[in-house]
Image (cartoon, rainbow over all chains, first blue to last red; front, side, top):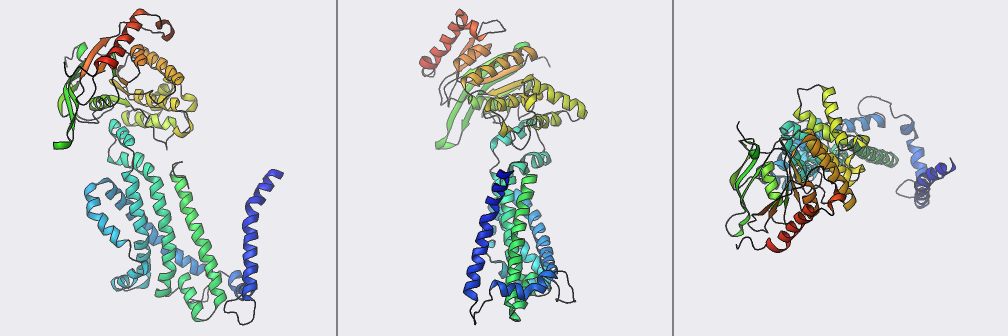
Length: 263
Length: 267
């Protein structure tokens, strides 16, 4: 019991102490009058209403932070799920066909270097609406690492596993489900994790431009109203949710990868 | 089908070359061999002589450049469960349990049988290699020798006409290897499988097989000599140490490997 307690303390104490230390430094640096950024005590003071009422809804964009984050997550979820399904399908295609790879790989290598926001004007022109444009930006941002990692995973399936499949005469579907997906799972989930990280990075920037409900526009709106404390609170939420998304994908990988995905 | 006893598995004038033009290399030249049903054949030769290529051609995993392989009078074109392979590095799927690795083969080949029957058949094959106790473990959690046992169970579960063993015990320590050799002998005695085994271990070849195929060195490896091991079964490793036939067989294979394998091509 004491050993366990000591272990928990050993894991929990260092980050808590570090956080406290950083808070103190921040407090010391920003406490003097005329400081351009608020100290932590003032941030909490200013945003207390937002912290304790995350669910309020006064219509329009005057909503609690929960609703802003929820709207952003919905966009990311839609775009990311589309990217995951298309990305894995395309990755399997270029991983298993030499000709598909030769035809598509150069194209993908160029397209993937385009910054997420550079797609936004084009998608606004195409969709003529902010909502699908933001989802498209998420999609196009997160699909590349998913495609590329899946393709590498499929190409790297050991010959031994292929031989097992050939001796057993597994058909295409059986090969896909029993050999290809589990064998490539570690790579696929690496791609999916990079993808979810990029989506969350892109959504904030995209929402700043398209406006409406969403954590990105909340931050932009706070900046326009000089509510620096609101921005800091929003950033904290963005960081925590980004971390949770990453862990969620990693956890799914562990669950589905049946021991082959070690994250 | 009037395939005679001695023509259960027939390898006829098989040649294999890799590459084209300048980089062309001849690996196997005119290999012919007839294997009777229930016979245990060991193929021995120096590494790189093309033993594995020959086994892969019989398995259908590699295509012969010319020549044919017949099994029960039918030509072999592609891999299939009637020629189950036990791979050198076991090739178990690491994300499946020991049970599921065998069950995968059982499910694929017995789709018309009931689930209970398939379960029974899976367990029976795991029993043959004494692996029922670890059926719920993953390949990563068991030893190299155990993995190879499961590989054998998976192959046996396919009820193959020919069992192809590609240096099955090559990566194991001497004691584990001896133990597995005993088990393979027992299984062979019980089920009467036709076996083609690749090895570079002279003792293993003499102890296990009815006939030893000695391959010359590559490139363009051929069958140098065939040696019949005239030992009765069951064989006991300890009793054989002083057995004249055993000693002679061993001497003959060793002599071939160390003296003759280089010169056959010139002869």
